[in-house]
Image (cartoon, rainbow, N blue to C red; front, top):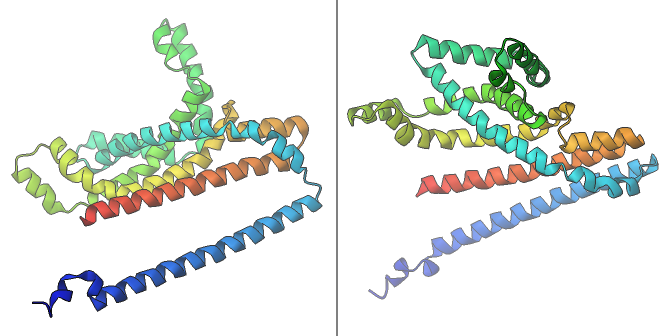
Length: 288
């Protein structure tokens, strides 16, 4: 019994010790590689900064007004988060419509996707912000003031609606692929248990489809944070609007554009890191 006691103790298992050594070596190699890449990034930023200074780049102006542009980060994040949530709901219903055998549902979802994906986001923003109030004015002249008020939206409401509709159409295919990734046998098993289509979707399909969908939703959110700059044309005080306001006032376009670009870059890095953490967490959850 004592001769084979090392079999029950991982610390005394030679294969276990070798495995730990390999894991530590791989982790150390990854850290060294990350440090090397970081050094390259620092050198590139230093070279870029040196080049800008040679072109009389006003760093004092940049740091003096960076806080004004930084205040738009909360608006950018808020608009993006609300829009991606609404877009996810629209994408889910759009995917269900595409997968439905009902011709009305297929026709509505197909028409919505075709129109939104076939027109630029900027045009959609203009239509919602400038076109809908015109429709509301016509309704008011027809004696429908209550209905007319629904067509007059604020700048942020118009921006959220435009981003939600646009990304909802593109994300429909992501949700459709995620729903179709669930094995057909599980649908049959759920039907055999007497589940309704809603119960099947909520208990069987969606929990598994989310694992496939989440990474793509994260990518869409990162893209949406950058596309949210387009809502600045309506006067939403987000990053781009604030940077452009100062740039036009003092004719310091390079300084303010770099501030805005840096903030979007930082938001993208943070969002990508959070997305990777979420993916790892979900992967570990499915391994148990």
